[in-house]
Length: 237
Image (cartoon, rainbow, N blue to C red; front, side):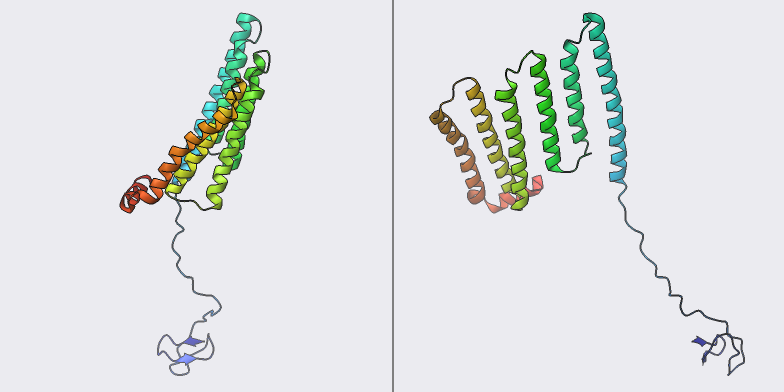
């Protein structure tokens, strides 16, 4: 359907003279929908720029690590004709490089980060104890402490997500996790020193939990609401 551009009368078909004024009416394609103007898609370039900067820093650090490890092996072999002290230093440097990989955000999952750092720590401690001509402290101390730390960290994050914990409760659960970890470490250190006494361990454990529990109860029920809100705004809780 078209209109005469001269007199404005509506005509039945296009490309024909107007029946009123005989003006030639141009053909109009009615199937083409009018294009609607859209707002440009908003995009924040800062994350991509930050990612590129971090990638460059990590590549540079990786090259430094490779050069440092190679130099330490070469110097150690030239001086001692064997790899002695360079084993300890290079293993520590490579472990630090692995932890740096997780710290630069290449792994997004919290669980994978915890497991990855725990595995790197276990490999580092196993190597250091093995280079010392024996496994003296890796099995009774290092392995259970590192594994326990990883398990407690995973459980803490799982509880936070499952219960949708927010605000001061996050800090409360964190202190509980730290106390449990301290108990775990204390138990294996005492066992390694042959000083494990179950009753004493339970008493020490209770004394550790008591102040944390009292602080949590006071924050939950005794702290004024305005102070809670002020602290929450201050620390973005």
